[in-house]
Length: 189
Ligand code: AMP
Image (cartoon, rainbow, N blue to C red; front, side):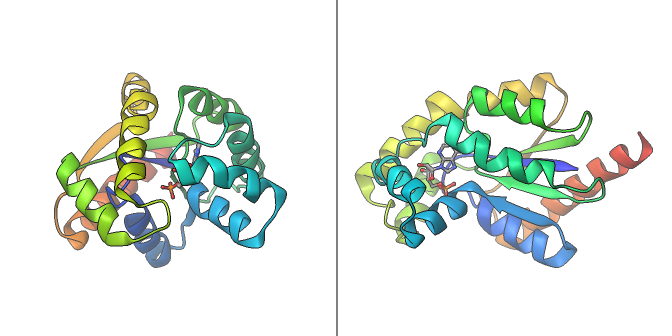
């Protein structure tokens, strides 16, 4: 089953996914992490992607879709994949739908927190693209381009919302319950 983690930068998707994946043998796929590995390796893709990332812009859809599609193809039916940071655009969401076996997208988990909380968390994280200006730009790109995916997955009956402005373990507990619940439904299907 594919679980999509939606929510603004800084909402804690990565932390939550890492915890859940570690505890349950699920696969955590963070496109941001994959890109940062390419940057660190100095690959051509990394060099090109870094221009977008350092500005807080999105890396072009075709690059991202290519990156994820190959991994979707290698999934086994019993795998649980936590998609963290993808899709971020409607083009990506539609490409994911097309690349995924029918019925395999079981859940879109939408993490929410106030903007002031997001900004504080991002500033505290200290990543290279976590400077004040770049953060503000990433949040506005998120609102314009990624936020519409909430409606996209809601229309498909896949959306579940989690209040992420709470202690990590409380968010994790809701996260796990929601994924288990969705897994139960796909197993019955
Ligand atoms: P993240 O670690 O998810 O915050 O991603 C860091 C940066 O990588 C983003 O600000 C984007 O520049 C880029 N990125 C990651 N995932 C995507 C995606 N699905 N589409 C476009 N750009 C992405």
